[in-house]
Length: 440
Image (cartoon, rainbow, N blue to C red; front, side, top):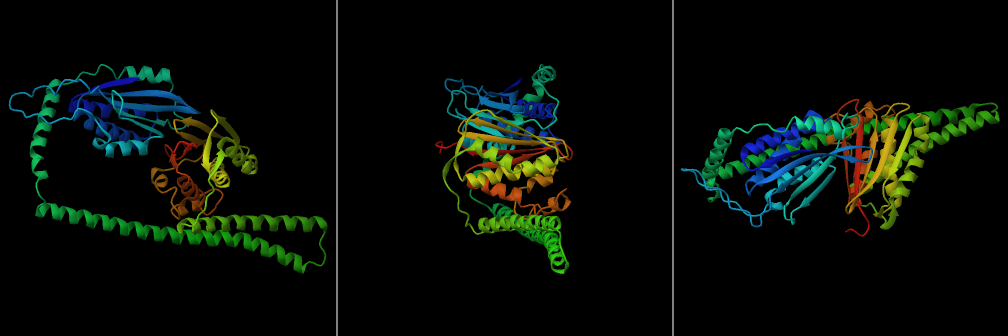
């Protein structure tokens, strides 16, 4: 465990540095280290604006792996003394007694997006936020090694002179920020126009990128349809032109045609689902669904693919869980995720799937030992048409619609889905969060 007190701007800088060090200790990629450092420093800076507090980094055990938990809380605002009197020549910055969600909304949203589990506890005696994220697959970290390395972080001296300089700088910044409350000026209008222009440019770039992705998608679709059609057509020609066909030959040709037809049927169903989502015509049942049984059905559905590659599935369910939704569609969600894990993992590897109830939600994690992903790929992983380049490089082909359908179906059930990978060759973790039935 690593604890830090927060009361000055210097403490904010120290908290950022500690967050990056702890993230690196837990095996997070450099980009995630920087993101966590920024999240912690932004939350700490908001907190220091309203009083003192603490930030704590803890390693906790989760299903299948360890997780880094961050808790940042304000010291009890009730009955707390006022801000110390400023030094000569300084003006105090006003502080409110209680830290609230409106004071840290941007930083809290960033923490929610980075983490697997997020909790805002703003009505307690010590208001604050607690969030956690599972360590990347393959991270060599245990509670003992975490405690040993974390001990080296303790006792770092604080430069009091630098702290006072930073506080004076904060007072000056507050002084010069005063005119911002005045009526809009010409500069304000120019700034607004510049922001609007940048936003329009970004939307135009996004539209061009989406159009390019659709072009790639149509090229892959043509390839995916051409192959089974050519195979089925060749089989039909063989039957038409053969003088005589043995029973075993006939059976072999029939099985091959059936495989190709089933493949094209799956492609067609995926395309129809895409059409339904883009038109807002998807219809979902609202039944009480036993999620562990649903996941068991999904494992059975992709069993042939997993057995063919000599892979193993480790299925861990820590609690019963009932959700409200469409059982058939939820089987589709987890079957697609398991098939994706199998497709991009080598022979003889293990796929882990764990279900954990967390408060009013259920978390399902699928962990593979596959090829991993670059951050740029993860950013558009669940978008329609945006994965065409992934499928084009994939080991077993496909339209790349499976994960896009997963994202849309999970959101339609009131949940969220996220993917994490430390980079190529490090495996991937897919996390699905769904509200438990009766929890609103």
